[in-house]
Amino acid sequence: MQLSSINLPNYLIRLGLCPPENQNQLIIKPVAAKNFNLLVTLPDGKKLLVKQERYNQDGKTAGEFGQEWRIQEFLQHFPELTTLNPYLPKVLHFDPGESIIIFRYLDEYRDLMEFYIEETIFPPAIAASIGTTLAVIHRATFNRDDYQHFFSQQSHSLPETVPNLISGLERITPDTFGLVPVDGLKFFALYQRYDSLGDAIAQLGKTFTPSCLTHNDLKLNNILLSNHWEQSRDRRVRFIDWERSHWGDPAFDVGTLIASYIQIWLNSLVISNALSLEESLRLATTPLDHLQPSIASLTQAYFHNFPEILTHRPTLLLQIIQFAGLALIQQIQAIIQYQKSFGNSGIAMLQVAKTLLCRPQQSIPTLFGTMTPDLIPPNPSHNSPETLCAPLR
Image (cartoon, rainbow, N blue to C red; front, side, top):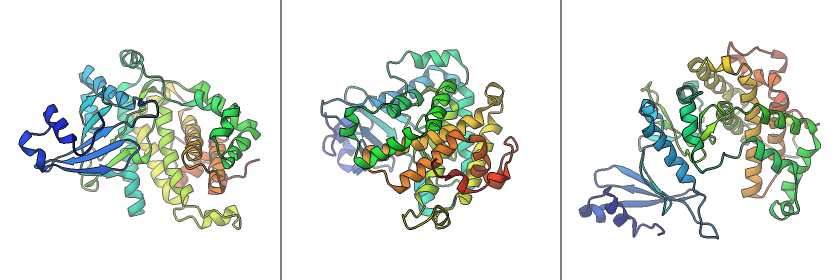
C-alpha cells in the first residue's frame, strides 16, 4: 500500500487513531522529506506525523523505521529507562509490512537548525541543554551488558562509521568513476594525497569503542527546540530521527554535533577564487567566534553531567574533535553523492576536517575560544579560525 491523502483516513480509523465520524474533518498536508510524510491535524487540534519509506527500483525499502521502532522496544523492555522518554519522539504505531511509522507531532517544538538560521542567534543555554540531554542518554545506558545484548540481537547492521568510511575512501574502483562526478573525483585525489589524513582516520577507527546507546546522526536538524525554551528549564530539546541508532561510541555523537555547528560557519563563508582565505573568513556572515560559546557550552554540559566517562576514556575530548572532522568528511561525501559537486567550499571543509583529525590538541582553543572549559588545556597560540583552515599540504 502506498499512502495518500485519500487512503490515509481509513488507515487511521483501522488503527483506532481517528474516530470514523471524523474522517472527513481531517486536514492532511504533505511534508517535504526524504520519505513520504503526511501531517494530519485531527478535529481536536492534535497532530500526527505519518511517514512511509520510499521504495527503490527493486520495490524494497531501506528498513530504517525498524531501527526507530527498536528504540521504543528498548525503552519498553527496560522500564528503568522511562526517564529518557521526554527526550525522544513519541511513536504511536509501526507497520513493518507497509513501512509506515506514526508519531505524535510535537507542535510546540521547532527544528533547531531552522531556529538558528531564522533567528541568527546561538544562545549557549540551548547548546548546554543539548549537551545535558545527550549526557543523560549516554550515561543511563553506559557499559550495560544487558542493554548491549538487546541491540546485538537485531538483524540491522552497524551504522556506517569509521571502518566502512575508510574502505570507501582508500579504494577507488571503476564503478566509482561512473557514480562520482568529475568534481567529486577531486575530493578523492586530495584525500589520497595526504597520508596523514588517512592515518588519522585509521587510528580513530582503532579507538572506536561501542559502549552505550548512540543516535549516530545527531545533526542540528535532528533536534527539536521547545517554543518556550526561554521560560522552561526542563526538556527544552528532543532528539528525533533515530533511524541510524545503535550501540555505539559516545564520542561519535558529540563529534557529529560539534561538526554541525562548524558547518554553520563554513556554509557562511564567501568562497571565491578572487578571495584569499583570510578575506573569506573576514566576510563570513556567521563568524566562528559567534559559535564558539555554544560549542563550549555543549561540551561543558556533557562532561558536567557525565564526568565518569573521562575515567574510562581519558582522551575522549581529542576523539570527539577527531570525530567532528570525520563528520565533515561524511558531509562532503553526501554533497558529492546528492548534489554532484565538490568546489571551493568543499575544499575549505576538507581543510578543516584534516586539521581536526590530524591536530586535535591544537584545534581545542580554536573550537572553544575564550570559553575553553577548565578540563581542556588552553593553547592561545592557535586561537584563530586560520588554524582550522590551514591549507592542505
